[in-house]
Image (cartoon, rainbow, N blue to C red; front, top):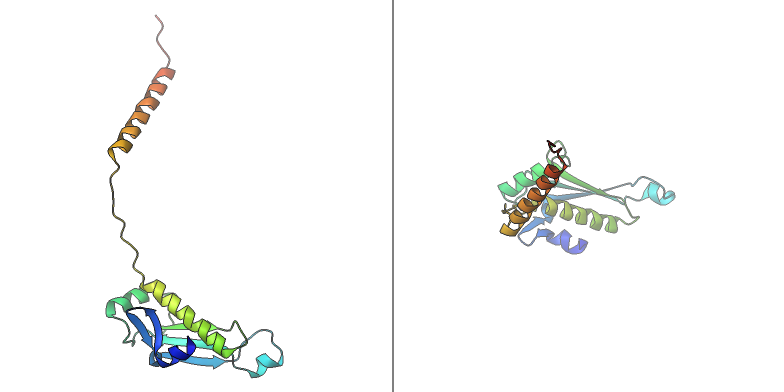
Length: 147
């Protein structure tokens, strides 16, 4: 995934591919335990995708992504993904790319529009019959006049 993505880009959907030139990757030192290894190796990977200048998506898709990922965008409108799960820079880059793909794919997904339906004749009849039974039951409970 990483070798191909470095050359071609990240395939989000069959029609949307973010070119590798639009994704900036940085490797920095990771935090946490790891002893001497963590102090000298830059294994943490940070991917930055400039959403506003991307040629991979249309204006409508850009607006949709901005709306859905409003909380994930930085002040410049960039999508920033960080991975420091493993001790390998290559694995962390693959994880970060996968997270970016999933994030953008979810933001681009358009939910199905709910079509309103009306209840069938049988359901209407059952509801009215049940209402009638209930009202009969309550009517039977009322106090009767005894003359």
